[in-house]
Image (tube, rainbow, N blue to C red; front, side, top):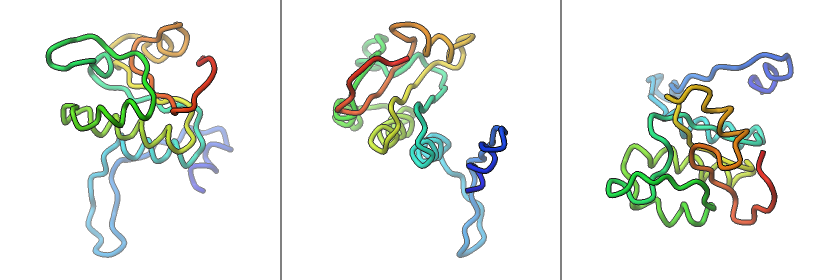
Length: 140
């Protein structure tokens, strides 16, 4: 509700990836990729964008640096056990998002200048895009 109120007021909410337990009052680190995916799904976002320091999900890492440009949720689910540890929370977040109403989830290289614009406006994009299994249509 608080986030929706900020959005309705034209503000851009900044969400910290830490949380305080109601039970014991301790502060915990929450994986930012997991939190962003849950938030995107809860808000009914059109797209989840995950910025990272690699080009996207590699086809056969570390044996290849070829980026998978697009895959479905089922294809991603099959790949998850084989992923390097740093990509697991990002790709699990993408999977959660598209399985819970988000149209596309994208992993892109945040080191590239204007990477978000390039991903959105180029036909092939520059990162990896995850879509629901029943996705039909054009992505803009």
